[in-house]
Length: 128
Image (cartoon, rainbow, N blue to C red; front, side, top):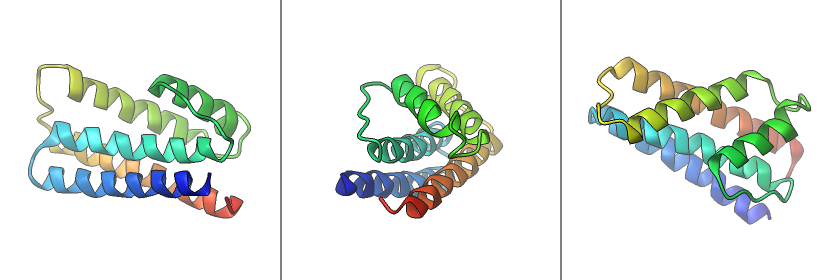
């Protein structure tokens, strides 16, 4: 299981890097997408520590909240961060209007980076 956790965290890091690259290239919708996927992969890493495998994003979000937020192992603001960036990603991916505000993409990336760092620190403290 440790290998899957490591792979998820590596994917999260790569997604953050991709998000910054896309932001620099003014590809804002794509940057938001990658920011969200950094968070999603961090969520999967956390779930793998509990031998949890989900088939959907909403299922992963729900289990993450149940196992880590409601139990107060992780701060509740991470739940709001996940929801916020997920909603931005949904709009960026599925609406026809491109995201035009650099600040929105920058904020999504900053939130995603904080989220990933929090999950990394938590998992390191658990020694999985």
